[in-house]
Image 1 (cartoon, rainbow, N blue to C red):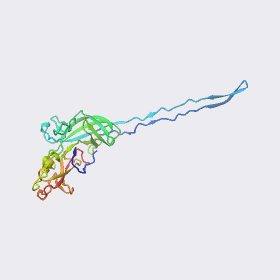
Image 2 (cartoon, one colour; image 1 turned 180 degrees about the horizontal axis):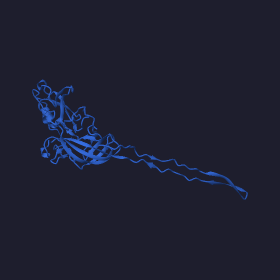
Image 3 (cartoon, rainbow, N blue to C red; image 1 turned 30 degrees about the vertical axis):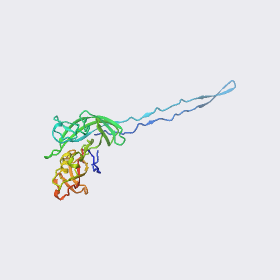
Image 4 (cartoon, rainbow, N blue to C red; image 1 turned 60 degrees about the vertical axis):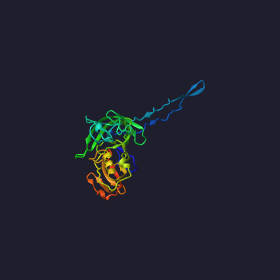
Length: 309
């Protein structure tokens, strides 16, 4: 998943492994109040040398042993989904891809763009996983990445490559939302996967920003808008095409991923001033580009890794 670096009220599908039913409550210590009988009087009197003595007995003091409710744990399973573009191996991979497709059918994270610090390095089979509470960010479980794979989710001729990293972790409680932290990477939000009952899904987050491309920062939009091709393209390629043909990207939108769209691929381009007006979708351009003014502000909708319901 990518994090859009320019302002927009992102309209993303609700970000949602699975657990055996448990009841989780914080440990509770219960201590019974001590009960002591000071004395009981034996009313049997004995007369010895003219005196009467009343015999007394004292009952033992009893204190209940403190009890602590056991903390119940369960196993969560799910996937982290990353976008990919290009060929197999790092030398053939688009520099903004979130993961590399390997010849053995697996995927691995990598350094990505040269100035992007770690990007997704460390995302690989065997990597340590920490589960963080979705509200407090406190660690509530640990596990690891257990497998990885990739697939072209488009049955047609558009390549929509998506890498999937499966994980398993033992957690305290039954969280419905949590954060998935892999290796030393920043955590990603995980929610219930609407396409895989009982599991969770998280979208790998990297930065998507038109400012990466000079054609998107140039204030000269030319004399007219010409044909562009963004829908179905990996986000970096799609954004470049939009900017190169006279449109201005005002914002990025990050909705959920339709079934035949790869993670981090463009779904559509819409007008910024009226987002109900779709200029391009997966069927192609829906408007004559020459009717648009140069610099027309648009929103590019890019799928996250989270599938739509």
